Amino acid sequence: MRPRTHKLAALVALPLALAALSACRDSRAGASTNAAGQPQVKIMVGGIDKVIYLPAKLTEQLGYFKEQGVDVQLLTEPSGASAENVLLAGQVQGVVGFYDHTVTLQAQGKCLTSVVQLAKTPGEAEVVSTQAAGSLTGARDFKGKKLGVTSPGSSTDYLTQYLAAKNGIKAADYSTVKAGAGSTFIAALSNGGIDAGMTTDPTIANVEAKGLGKVLVDMRTEEGTRQALGGLYPAASLYMGCDYVKANPQTVQKVVNAFVKTMRWIGSHDASEIAAKMPADYAGGNQALYVKSIKDSSPMFTSDGRMPEGGPQTVLDVLGTFNDKVKAKKDAIKLEETYTTAFVDKAS
Image 1: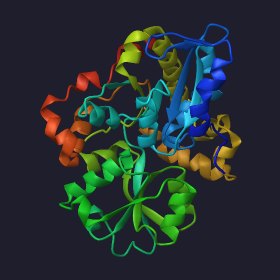
Image 2 (image 1 turned 135 degrees about the horizontal axis):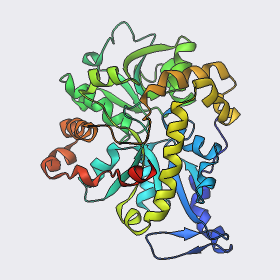
Image 3 (image 1 turned 90 degrees about the vertical axis):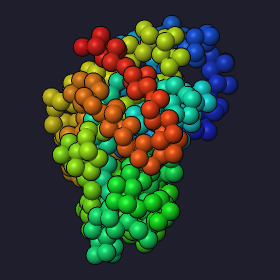
Image 4 (image 1 turned 30 degrees about the vertical axis):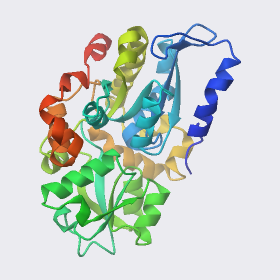
């Protein structure tokens, strides 16, 4: 069962509802306050029940946003690409999604910056179906196959294209299928809709538990990520528009303080303790499997919200291999504008 979350339709109607309340909005790049005078921040999560984005909901569950005196509203979209679009439309102030979007969007003349880094690896894996496992033993076998991604333009799509390009296979040589995550991904894998696909926990754990497939390329660990991508690939992060960050440093600092405290909490608690803090329906009725999915994916998390050394360059190298827009602007990309450690430094 998917968690009960605010959907995009509700988000679109939200401004009308807020107009009837005492919350006020000013001109500082979308800054607003609630009736108690606390800053309000809406954050879109690219799949709030995915383990890769667990720190977002966990921070709320632990009460750290409230502790910092910031009114954070978490919303969700199943795809990081969709979450990014809502941010660009000015409907939210931040996205918990993959850092690589800040690089691709800079190549398109837009400025987004990661203010706190939640993961140093993608936390994703290429999973092959049991039926296709005999003929698909690695990325070199992608040609002619149906490969699932969350959605076109998502980070799962980026990584799939890179693994293919690294093995001399063009995107036109295989079929890209929008498979989503969770139940839709599992259905596509089991009914032959895809031969393999890029996904995350708890979907990975469910696929393995049901005997529907196995991990082909594992990027949940540092070792697996270095082997697949040539270095650490900073993934899950909180990124915001550069203008908003510049105009609202105190609010951003409060949000980052909360996330940094959560990352330290994760580092000092085991998977069962982490799972116990999450909403009950995130486990989908199988708490033991949910604990396993957190344990399997937890190596991806940073301990303090810092950007891993050399990570941004790895991301640029990966995107510059297959993404035509990034490739054309690769030498002009200013990585120092795609992330900042200033807020994490103060939080520490």
